[in-house]
Length: 313
Image (cartoon, rainbow, N blue to C red; front, side, top):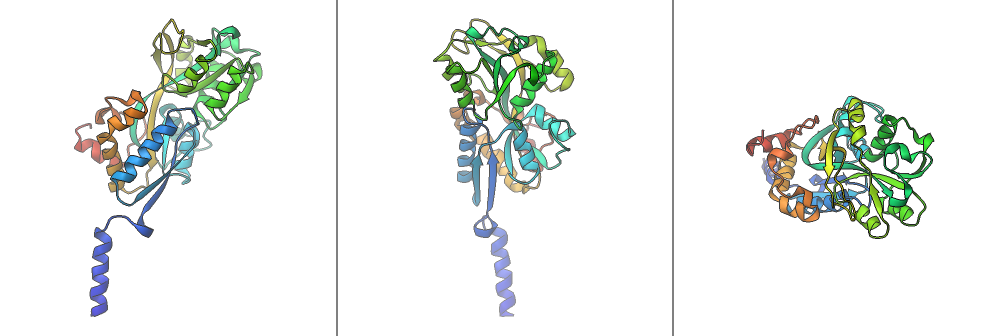
């Protein structure tokens, strides 16, 4: 009888206590390449979740759009940043994914991303076709920007065989190559103004290539693309507004995470928009309705419950 009472009491404690010790949730969070927005933003999210939700620990690590979705789907991470166009490709099992992803759920949609093609002003690159024979710095496979680079070359009638690709995992390293005159252009997918582009512009005159003529062709490959403007003056000596392919940054989680935890993660984000905006101003004014935007990726049940409570769905 005494043993039975002790067992019952222990069960009550386990059911009511916060997650600690062996029951604590330790999660891996795949962010982005060095020099992009995802690394510092991932650090901010890690800190706010750990402070607000008892019993969770988050390890942030570098990542990339495609690699993050595969990482979460394959159980190598529980959280990751994603880009709407390539996440939908993953759900559909379209290249570069080897098969359909089935364990990735949307947590929150955050802000638009801009695919940018930046060239040295002296390189003579005014359109994609002008890259022929030139040294172009591209992110490695597993990065959304690399996928879009291959696609926009395809729309322009080119392949990697027509240019001299130099694959670099870091935007910082890409900038170093252009700054030193060892490359003519580089591509990246991130927010504006990109700190890496600003760094390059502080050392060399640059050209932000207008990609408007290629957007309709990209939409035939993936209807998730939209044309988004980079206003004049976004970068030094940029005198004209240019249009580039756009998509959305969002945060995904494993669909297997507990509903209550994911609910609290989204609630924490919605309550700390100003803290996220302090890291990246493009998040300023983010609302639960925008976070719940339908980008073709199913919401985690915990996120859906919060958005319904907030009147966003």
